[in-house]
Length: 301
Picture 1 (cartoon, rainbow, N blue to C red):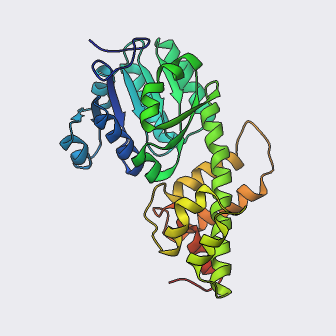
Picture 2 (tube, rainbow, N blue to C red; picture 1 turned 90 degrees about the vertical axis):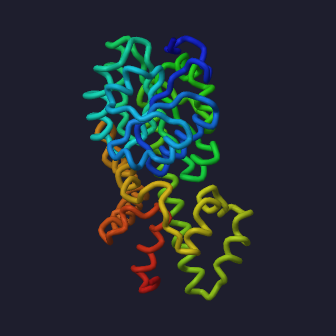
């Protein structure tokens, strides 16, 4: 027996499906296995699923097979176009009634609303739930989760969200995605500010480690500094989130079709992260934006 909504969620009968096992998605999915849940995954490249399969996950041969055998489905993929193709065109036609789909991808609010409406036509439910916290938050179950959709369904999902981090209910469908875009505007600006502070400090002859230690307890301190400061100093650009995805996220804020907003800081941040992509560093972590500031000042290497 499955555990479709509104049956109580429990490892003994709630079947979880997962699509998207990259840096973030793989770490998040593994936490459900550790918590004792039955996890089915789909991967376009099955060899990338080896680690999860070795710890107990099963491999579905197609998204349609995964949809037909899951009570709750999580997706964590790349771009809104990927979400449209996977969720609207592939998953939804294969869902059983009362299945819940949670999209963790940072995507467009209007697309989240469209998926929500299409799911209801199938007597299913959709929650847009992008996350913040990077690869460490995914690994440690300390993500901030921004959820949009039906409040009752989000509450029902709380035992699962609690495995991943802290869920914050933001309102109706699409509001989770709007919150993530606003989050990225703040994070992008913070990364640029931290990069410039470190570059200035180096030019001024400061010890960068001492600089971080000195300012972290004051007004300049932030979660961005805690997550990425040491990585920037050590030139560790391994991705928690790709720079090219930051360009996408900031673009959805700067170019949001439903609203006409002037966001000069976000527009500048988008240009700087776009510079990373132009330099061939789009697959670097977002902390790599410091390399753009360094290049502008004839530094780095």
